[in-house]
Image (cartoon, rainbow, N blue to C red; front, side):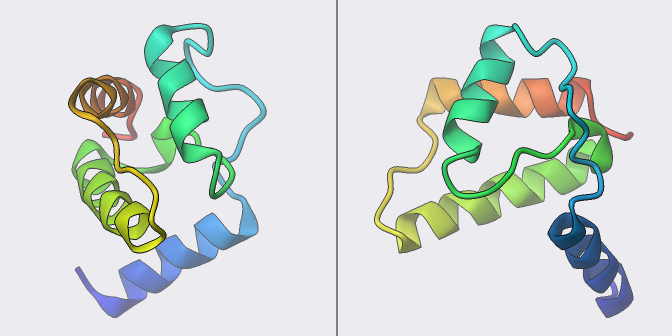
Length: 92
């Protein structure tokens, strides 16, 4: 992916675009895992902000970041739930 693409993504994430007040299926168990595990470090982004492929990349990147911070990465069942949730509601 190009530098311009990454710069655009970083700008969107840092300015809060895609951080709508409501997540899809917010009451679901998968959404609750997503919020619980991801909001400890940053605001939770709407799944429609990224494509399914981009979310896969971000999940791997966040696992690396959690390890770097000395926090446990997503466990198998958590990762499956969050990945399925993000894919279901992704932007493509």
